[in-house]
Length: 331
Picture 1 (cartoon, rainbow, N blue to C red):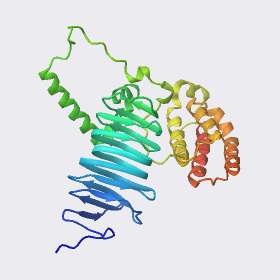
Picture 2: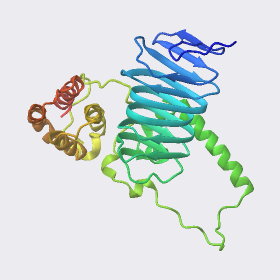
Picture 3: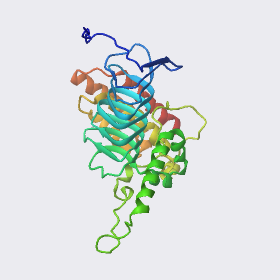
Picture 4: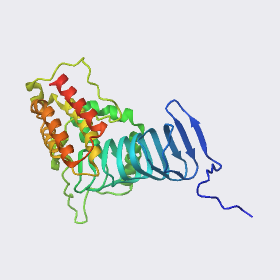
């Protein structure tokens, strides 16, 4: 008689692969992988060749890769991942920092804070509660209202920032996905003439997202959110004139990366007024004004926390200090 397996039993079925790499454990399975508990050791890679992956982090986790090419990847908690690749990717809750998220069918974002270089998929659904940035969003559907900054189509991004070509070198999965989409598009065009509509007229083209978007959120080079901000010397200080000419793009990206980490600490509470003021100056590229005000805004934030009886997270303190140092070094 087959013994019923207790819910607390650790079962390693046939097909499981566990290895230890330089950055942590690498777990692979033919079927589903479900990780719900806190891990004491670093986890570098989770893959499923035929099933799906559920990863609900109880503590902050940093991974290189999560892949379920034929299934769904479901994510929750505080996660930093270089690459996520699946048929469908679902962000359930929490904070997700990712380099590239590539999904063959769809990406569903209903968490709190997202910071990503590239989203590549036929369909992206973004909840209005999600805040943060997705520098490039390559999808076929209309996104609708959302609060993510960025949102370039890749073609638009490369046209404005030719150095952004490195994004395809950094994330080969994105290039593979785009090549696959192009091949499928060529096959469709070979069998169907879509140049005319049913009335024989040339169809009206939809305006590009670049023409209809808020340009204030779209300046900057490739945002690599998994890299540390470098505030060391070696670059000249930005002047008022150079910033006015658009040379403050890199400065904006560095400050934005630190600010997103601060904002991620307030997913369960309203964003304090001093941080709203800081965000307004950052989005306006008022770097000199922000440099003069950031210390007083920090003091106002501390007073706000005391009035509300809230602790100040170490992440908030560290990243406000980082922003202050960046402004002192660059402005």
